[in-house]
Image (tube, rainbow, N blue to C red; front, side, top):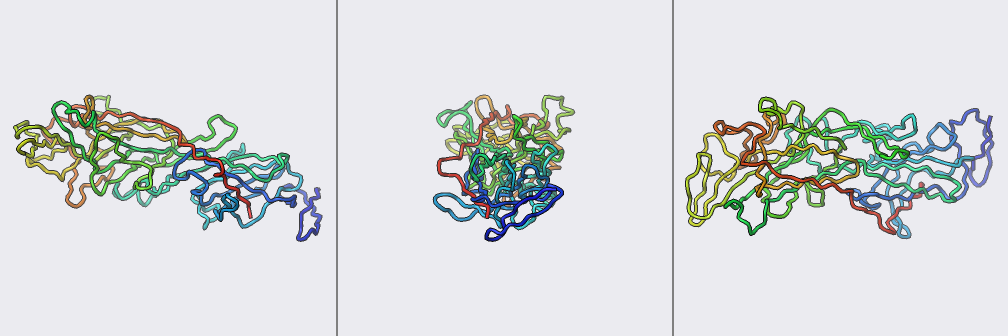
Length: 449
């Protein structure tokens, strides 16, 4: 039997008898518990002002019941240069408790209870927070059967932030420091034409126009555990279901000799891919032609809807029967890709699908930029995608005046995995931590009221 004191009203004292330690009892020891927060890396949520709310859990030493059980701290006013977040209840240190464990996560839906929130939060047997069945925000089961260009662009993806700390009362402060970690991987795709603007590569001046871009066969969901005591604090286990992320552009993007952003994270982009960390399975085109065509393991690749033209100096000349030429007096243009069966007229509204297999391992809190090079000294325009995916992925067939080719010309002699021109696309991947967002004075002092 334990006796605990609880502050009541204007100093009234109540002696309470309890046979268990399940009830967390509080005594007002002065200033309320508050939080200061930090963002370790920059992205969609890059500072305290961008953090609109987060959900808080806390467990006091010696108690089995949660001290704070999933309340939402919401962004409020700025006071004395600090951002204030408020809650509906004021919390103080429990009587006789020397330490409290705190967990927090964002995003959260403040209109829902913790059990019905967009994130499913629980604690493992070791006390580490665990989030189950997480998917990036824009993907829903209802959208899975829709055409690719109508969902999964990433425009509504939200940063998944996790924080943990164990606070000691002996430190003499009630301001609890929460350091949020980014749990997802940020993905960008950029593209360029090889060489430089003053170079005539192999006698051609290439023009590449991109009408859409996707990352195909990416695992869409997973469980993550945040364990402060491990070297790799964030541990992901991913599901088996694979989806496609990306979108069709309203107007084509003409590539130049600088890196053009196709899937990028910025205020003007229609995509902001923050995906579940994972080791991508690759579509293995090193296999013989009888097996590589079908992509049996649903391997991953970057898929581009594009068009390639080559401008030659001089009057029009004849080429092979796959050259569709737009003539001119001083130059003429070859329609290099795509080519449609039965068509012999230059068609500037025709686009086709090419791809680049990838097998990167995405880690939490890292930014991966895929830099694709078209039509350089050692690069071409990609390879033909697997035949089964051209049907199964429900890719767009056209948009207004545009027509998109999904099939390989019957008399081309080529198969999935073969280069559409003479070489595949050359690419590199740059990997970096997200930029530091923390600056002096950017902290948020968050009284829990």
